[in-house]
Every structure is written in structure tokens, then in C-alpha cells.
Image 1 (cartoon, helix red, strand yellow):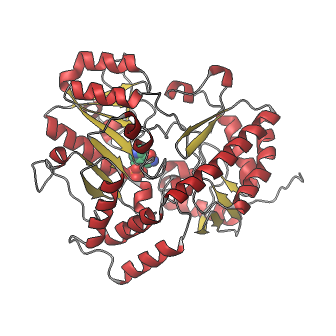
Image 2 (cartoon, protein in one colour):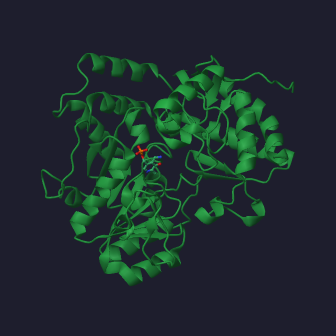
Image 3 (cartoon, protein in one colour):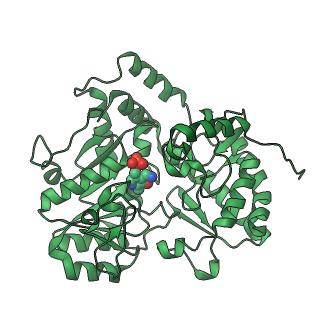
Length: 441
Ligand code: PMP
């Protein structure tokens, strides 16, 4: 390849400098700043189908899809039409509306929840689910897994304490110790740790929250039977089992990860959280579950929860239109495109001699730059061994050739129904160079 010294993103660079003057780090969510991979974050000006266009006019195949939501690709004509029509009817009334009823019905239809309440972000969904679990059970302790991310809820921004069944310490300045003092952080996929925690604290545990399949430490699926084991131990101790499907919901499959796990193995969560795809690219999220638990929410019950823009008519219209278009064919397409890209990635990395492991959960997958001799990645300790320097080299080599990967080695790669042969070919053409760059890093 010819070595180019020209700045590939001068307009993004100028905008980034302006952004840094008025916004911490120049971004409104940290990972967008490219801190993990270095270089200039691309400011995107528009997007259509599988493609992003940056402010310098460069096109990229999008392999992150807004960190999950864009299941149908960008600016899907039917979603745009529905949203445009909704905007013309007014953007927020602060009253109940028909679209939120229809979206709730669609979610209840696809998942095991009896009732849902809408909020505006995944963070709000998990925060509210935990409040409801505590209010319902009259208990305070929450169990979570290291490497599972549930948004920036104070009590969940927690790192494991010094022993397995000891309470957590804050994972960031600004979270008081009292906020994490009721949180137990355990290693993912570790049944013995879960058993020990319930043996010691079972009668104080309000809920255990887990990503239905972990997607925030790269994709780390639960081991066979693990979620069912969690459901069972929660039931035996009178705790609620909360599965966070903000990322996997309506993405891992038509019915989320539950549809390919709980529905098959025969377990049901007491509460679930959703976000991303169900908002069709707008701020919409939800939590839902058993009718008797949900009836503890205000105004039916005593647990307070509210939101000015909750169930917003534009967001719920976008989500409803997206879910109605998310047919079995969409998931079949995304699965087959994923299979092609996973195989090509592993072939290229193998040919270049770059150690790696590819893992999947339904249609989601990610690539760890770990030694395959260490086996599959089953928890955060193993995920943390991924070679960030190799990933950064891989990422930039892909970016130079028009492929936008997640700017973090700990993210899933996301596809859409709009990823067509041209998009796939662009990825396939870029992979050998990127694999060599990763091997040389
Ligand atoms: N839960 C999971 C599993 C997530 O992946 C995320 C976001 N990546 C959240 C919760 C938080 O959602 P939000 O960013 O909308 O607050």
C-alpha cells in the first residue's frame, strides 16, 4: 500500500478541537473520543443504510450501528416516513398516546414480560428495575457480575471488593461508598461464586442483575444452563432475577437473547430491561416483567418512578416501526452476513498469524485478541487479556480502508439488514491489511 501522510480527517480534527473547548473530552459519551484506539474521532455528518459519511466526505461501512440500535441500517425509508409524520403531529404532549400502547404490546408479544414501563435510556431502565426489585422484596442487596455493564447507575458502577462475597467498592470517583455498599460483584459464569454469595447473604438479596448474554466485555455468552441456574437460585432465595437485554433485546434474535436461551431452557426472568433497538435510534428504553411485580410501580403501587419524556411519541413511533420491520428475514440476513464476516476475519487473522478468539451470542459477535490456547473467554478477567495494542492497529487499518469498527476492543460488532454485498466486500477487502497490522503491532 502507498504510505499516505495526508491527514485523513481534517474537518473532524477541527471540530474535535472546538468540541474539546466546550465539552469534557470533546464528546458526550467517553468511548466516542477514540481514547482506547488513539487518533481523531470521526464526526459523522450523515448515514444511510450500512454507511456512515463523515464531515470530510469519507464513507465507512458501519460495523457498530450506533452501538446496537440501528438494526435496519440508517435512515430506513419507512422509519423516516413514520417519524416525519409523527413529528408533524407534535413532538411531546406529556399525556398517554397510542404509539406507546402499541410498542408495549409489541414488546409483551415478543418477550416473557407481562407489562412494561418506558423510560429514555438503558441506564434509567436498570436503575428503575433495581428500585422496583428492592421495593417489591423489601430487601436491599443487589448482585451483579464483573464486566457486565448496566449503564451509569451509581450502585452498579462498582468493582469487586477484596473477597468473593464481600461488598463492592465504587468503580469511579463521585460514587459514594454507601452507594456500592449493598452491591455484590461476582465473576461471570462462576456458579460457585453465586452459590457462596447466596449462601451468605441470600435473605438480604433483592435481585441479581445480569446481561442476558454479556456484550460489554466483548461478547461473552453465558455457559450452558448458567442463566437457568441464576433464575433458579434467585427463586429459591426469594430474590428477583433481572436480565438486562438493553443490548441483546430484539438484536441477538427477534425475541432477544431470552428467545434463544430461556425460551429453550425453560426459565423466565422476573424483570427485564430493554433499550437500543426498541427505540429505533431515538432515546427510548424500558423495563418490564411479572404483572405482580410491575403492579408495585406508581401509580398502581408504592414504588415511585416517572419521566417527562418517557414514552415520547416520536421515540415510540421509531421503535414500533423498527420492530414491525424486524421480521425473521432481517435476523436471518444479519446472521448470514455475520457468518461471512466472522469467517473472513478469522481467516485473515490466522493467515497473518495474529492470535484471536471469535465469540457469538445470537447475531452478536466480537473478536478478542487473546491466545486461543487460553480457551474461550468466559469472564472479565479473561476478556481483559485482549491485546489492546493489536486491536488499535487493526481498528485503524480498517478505518483507513473505509470500515468503521467499534473504537474499543471490548465491544460487539453490530450489523444491520442494510449490510449488502457492497458493504460486505468493503469489509472483506480491508481485512488482510488490518490483520497484518494487528500481527505486526
Ligand atoms: N445495559 C446494557 C446491557 C447496555 O449495553 C447499555 C449501554 N451500552 C446500558 C445498559 C445503558 O444504556 P444507555 O447507554 O442507554 O443508558
